[in-house]
Image 1 (cartoon, helix red, strand yellow):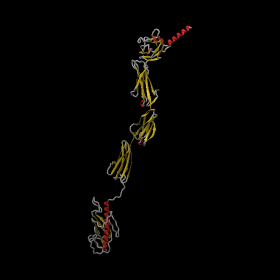
Image 2 (image 1 turned 45 degrees about the vertical axis):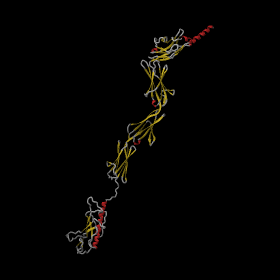
Image 3 (image 1 turned 60 degrees about the vertical axis):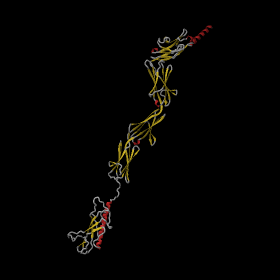
Image 4 (image 1 turned 135 degrees about the vertical axis):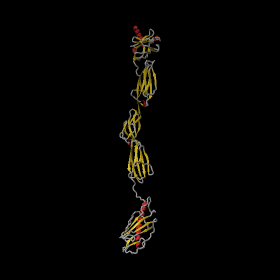
Length: 589
């Protein structure tokens, strides 16, 4: 019984001693070839051996049965480096330098103090550390957080949000830690914040995203200090949702838009997500939709297509509008009209782009403002001009009035035959007066001849009338065949057996045509002369002073004096014909 009790007590003591040895180290560490490896480590021993642990205790690392490192001679073993802290601090953290591929493998820790303190922390009771040697450093780790939640790659953030980009890289050698640096495709400086622990270096980049950050790549670069520095990097493309921005329109083909050609208006916008485009046209202040899509094509353009066009770019984050003035260039087009009242008035309108010039031409000659012609002009908007012409000048039937307009793309004209004013009845007053004087003279002569004839029968054969000197020569035949001459006012010795029968009288106006430049009329001071010839019936015999073979023609001459008497009558005619018994004829020539 006593033997059994002793055995149990001894086993409990041994178990207590064994259970008091502990070690904390990672199962695996990575080492960068050419750099150093850092192995964090702590250990513990039984309380009963606490007094046996001194700073002179040796701390060693073994690989299998081969000693690799001894703290008492750190530069003499296969692994050279240093062990941190002291044995009494129970620190076994170690850094090995100049790691190569031959150093990879599984390592365990051994503590050697006094004779009673000799212990190896190895399997299966304790964990060992596996050293992995890397030929090159791994890329840094990059993560993005929004509102303290990590985002997966290709996730989008909304414009105005705050995000945190975090980059970290492993520290292989604390004595020679790597460095981290941020860069972006915006080529702008960024502010970062760095910190580190025993095994990792961290850099944070905080920013408020905007449309400028959409599809911007942020890159974190790690540089490891070796014999030749080695750099690695990791990138992240930030996706931002934002409303349309920088919306613009273009015209194709570029330059001036000429009438009759096709033109395409193209709209583009910077937005995420993609936008929907709608085209509108400004019609009298109202926006009327034309079509959807980024492009608007107009075939066979003309002046009616000119105007303001609007492109609307819209997505779920907002809307943006932009306008474009389409200015179709064309040659002038003319419309005109004319009317006549007291003067001729013509109106001409010309429309073209650019605004044309306008001028009036008469039979090919340019008309200007004058006393007879008035020309005014006014502009009609930006593409029209209106001209008004008023003229009082007489136009011939052959005159051609023309409205002419031109700009850099061509010219146009409209012409019409000038319509002369209706002919009005007009009088040439000098001629009227002259004609009246002639008619009056004829009528007066006829009246005098009739009066003389009547007096010849009843009174003495000759008399003088106030304002008129009349010389009347008549040849008559009596019953005895003798001529009676009354030219001197004395009666013939031979009595007339029968009254004279005068068939007609001829009056010849000797001076009827005025001299050059002289105007005839009632007030004319020019005397008129007329020769009156009487032709009695059967007048074929000779007079006393002439040959018997030639009939004697008696003449009567009447002079119209400068001061006409009350018996003188004027009419507007050149010839007058009267008939009376016996027949009397007045012939003016």
